[in-house]
Amino acid sequence: MQSLANCEIIMDIIEIEKITAANKILELDVFTKDEERYRFVFDSICCIRYSIENASLTRFLEFRNFLPENIVHNCVYIVMESDYIGYFLKHVDDKAQIDGLMHYIIYDNMDTKIDVLTNKRPVLIKI
Image 1 (cartoon, rainbow, N blue to C red):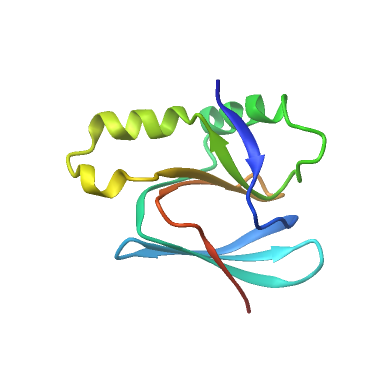
Image 2: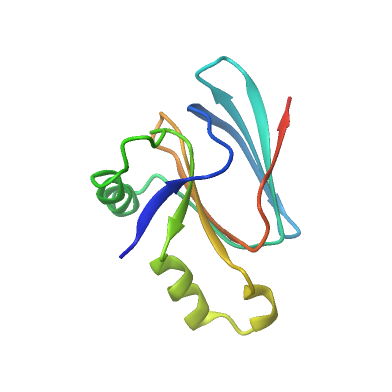
């Protein structure tokens, strides 16, 4: 069963202000509850899904119904036992890019949700 866990980078994200993706690199500029700005850099992304659609938000809210007590509510999560990874693996031709694949969800207070499949951990830069 899928579940959410906090990523090693924990912060309360008010807004994802900018999204840039090209050449398998995703950059997200975020504004936090502490009034700081950071850039997440995901290198070697396999797949991203940017969503404000009702179906995706409903799926995410189902995750949030079973959150552990210590989880931050607007943050970067890792999806354990991800159905999205399973779906991706059924449709990908290049099997070399799937070693150690992780499913991250980045969620802000404005209901923006971004799913990222990558085999590298994100880097955080203060901007």
